[in-house]
Image (cartoon, rainbow, N blue to C red; front, side, top):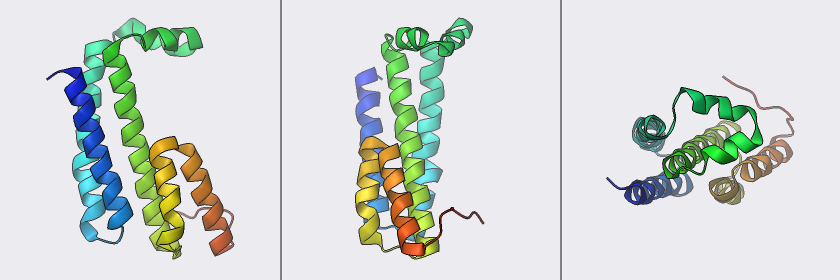
Length: 144
């Protein structure tokens, strides 16, 4: 499969996952589809892309900005990085939805957070944390 095809399919899968979070956050299968299929598939493709683009010496490149820039001159490494972002942003979106349901934050307030997380990752998470803090009057996120 061509890298451009993997890129397109990854974007389509990520979009499907985000649509589930936006449209069906309470559906019992939403989280199962996202983690049980989309995220696991992203992880497998990510590992495949790493084996195509990285060797033992490549990991030393993570210690400097110039080294990281050099890594991302390889198209396979760029695609691996993109899939990394798609997977982690989708996991953050899933966290937001689960935390929203746990804390009774209105879904309409969360939709902009999810859209921003899809596009700008940490910006959407920060907005959600602010909205959650204001709506629950709790400053820290509690875990089960």
